[in-house]
Amino acid sequence: MAAAVYSPPAAAQVEEARIGVGLNTMVSTADGLGIGIRGRASVPVNADVSAAADLGLTGFVLNGRRNADYILDPQFSAIVMLPISPTEANYVLFGLGAYLSVGGDSGGGPTVHLGLGRVRALQESSFYYEINPALMIGQDHVHLMIPLRIGIIL
Image (cartoon, rainbow, N blue to C red; front, side):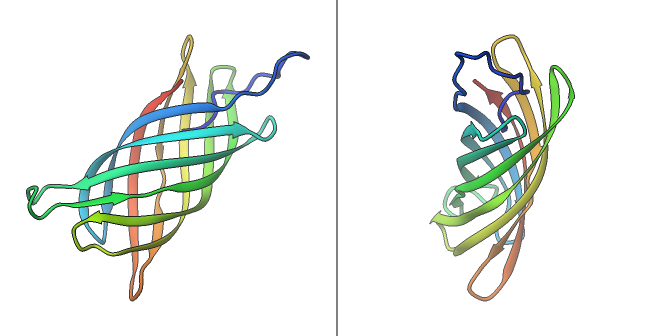
């Protein structure tokens, strides 16, 4: 999720934080295929860059609830907007985070991520979709996660 397509503020207008909510699927070399939810808050730094913090909860439940793993994956990101029209923009996001097991035995560790997305302005909100691959640096192994996300920026 990124800040909506940027338009210059009026002289008295103050830049506002943006809140987004969405769904994700994640393929992980540590846990397999999972589904989850995600929220993100972003604050514009300037016309091109935003700072963001987000949190996702993904459940790897395809083997049933008894064998399920649940992962919290907070991320801190820089988001660079690449406008393509007044109502659409591509963006690049990158930063650091964590892969934290809250159920099951998957372990966890710090993450580094780099992704691409697209945002489209609607009438009062924005629609986004993104792919944001991350490397999780575990105690003994490095794992790859590839989440696909879709949602609304309010």
